Image (cartoon, rainbow, N blue to C red):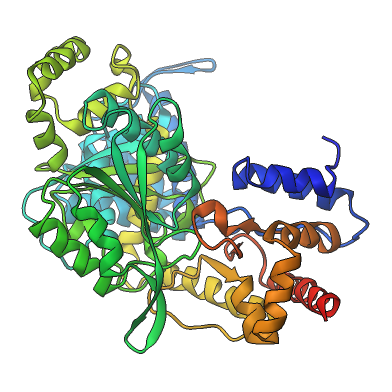
Length: 535
């Protein structure tokens, strides 16, 4: 791809996704005369990986291969793991395994399932062995039996801490949060919970696909935006949701609301005040409202509690393992839904002709559609129903997800969690040092991203008159272009997330700490140069 001109860059800015625009900026940086390495702070994947659960995964994989060979071996062909005596054989394998830390973790991991979750040891180990070998279709297709219970224990610990919620949750293991989003939108449409042209609400700022999907020809939803604005809470200014903004959800025509919590790109979680008003609104005014919360960044906020905990009947939760454990390439995610939920109850209220249509759609499942839960319809829809027998996340992926979950559950002091938070905070401090600015502290800040409002920065540093002059002459796209062209720094526009038109998003997770000093200095240099020009 040839390097686009500045004019071409400006013409593309409002027409394509922010992530696609980022690739254009990278191409500009590659063709610039700047000799320093390109710093891409546009991507959200972290530059850390959780090692112990990965080591355990590969070590257990070696044990599972030995189990297949023990059953039957002929040259490079082997059988399947056998259940009888598998617990004793794992004990012998671990006693001889050279890395005692890894062997000890696997032992604790297996024992957690047995002693804490009540698993039968041989059934538990056998499921893991079959799963990691990947020699069978996922069964049950939604999630493997033991793994579902273990992963749910992790999710409820992180999303609903110290909460006793009556009833149980069902879980669908999916190929990352993105797959969960795709399956969800399709099933909402197939099951007449949403119709083309229906009104939905997005709590913004929000991850870009939630903005783009509703506009696709398949959906064409009427979208209202509930915008976070500056509000005073506990003596500090925070980007939260006012009562007036949330009151838009009282409109009975709004069928569903979508929220990323903590949001993206501000990286701010719902405050206690905003969340409580939303909870009261749903309980008193909108008990029929469908809520979808995407909580991928939840582990980075102390004392985080999901809407799933307070509104379990109304809320479907999408969670991805990608950011916390550094596994964007593994594609590990879940959909969590309470057994008693508004989605199933809304299906029961459909028109007779709609029930008849759904009966035809799900007839191949061998049961009446009225008996199929919404989350199980998602599973079937993920394989166009007809291929339901092949549905489900690959079993090796489910086993790796289980090892990550077990790792977090066994980390009683949350040492890993505190380390990831500390890394992100240090990087933000370093960025702001380069910008020559002071960080505004926010107890709901995840520190995974930060959004820098250039207009606000100009006013604070150089005054309103100078800021107005700069804004009259330049645009945010000019700032992104200059960073790429002059400094080999890549950022994303916050406007693409339905946030500030003069905001830029910096990912604090994917570069070494020292890189953020260079990014901050480059940002300052571009603005300072503009200020000199307008003066």
